[in-house]
Length: 226
Image (cartoon, rainbow, N blue to C red; front, side):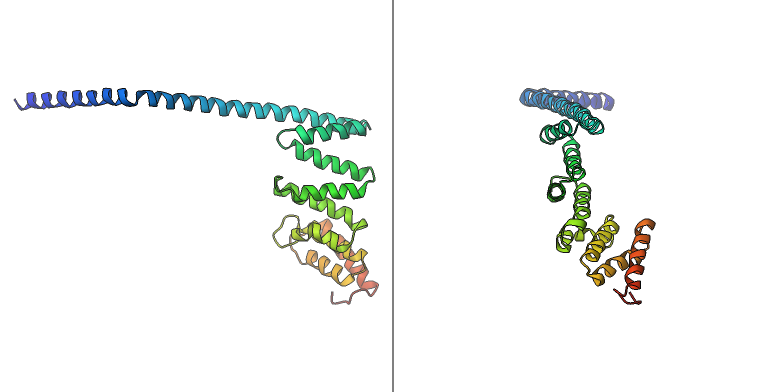
């Protein structure tokens, strides 16, 4: 008798659950279907967007390669036109690469002022990845060593010279060379000493810093203690 009662109770519970499911489906079924459709459409749309972006970036890569080929062939006007187009209409990382290559062309063409301006503009563009901005600042700094004042060089690269910054070695060398050119030998020595005292300084940068320190010491521009 107890088994029959248990069986009856289970059947009643199952029927109640079934009734609740049917009632819930009648009330919320359309909403659930709509949500499922939206999920499928959203996933499909996202995948489609990713595919489109990938295709556009690939096409931009082909355009960038054509600009490099034009440069190699000496067709600089065509290269500049292609780079300008890529900067305005490209996808992925290629607009930034186009800006950098165009600035380099200006420097190679002898238009140093325009190249500095271009690199400086890239270095200040917050929409560009930090590593690329910092590299552009260094390029501006190198060009300014021969053409600008120490203050102008400092404005571009001194923020990169702090301990821990991966660009600090180049930044310190640029600042030291700029100070040396301005005949501020004490300031130059301070930057070259910063390179010499950094255990992680690359050997080539360290060697150049030590040579200039020895030259300044031999010329009496700084004391033996520097």
